[in-house]
Length: 61
Image (cartoon, rainbow, N blue to C red; front, side, top):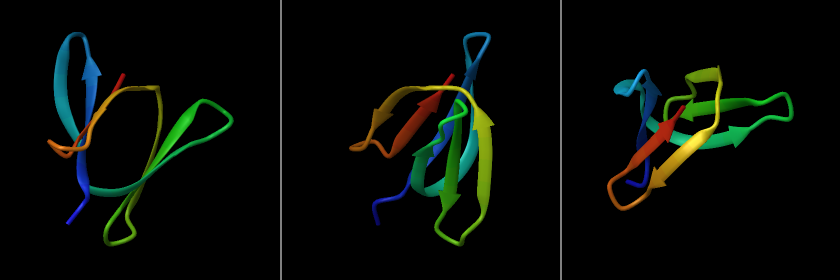
């Protein structure tokens, strides 16, 4: 599988935001929409700091 886990970086700490992310979609209003493999969604204000596809990690700040 090619899905990744999304983490949020806040105050220097990483915490899991969503598991099994299949789609990352930046929106025009500065938000990011994350969609999981089962269709669950999270919309969060932030920016992508790093995507490491080999390690299946997305870091948002």
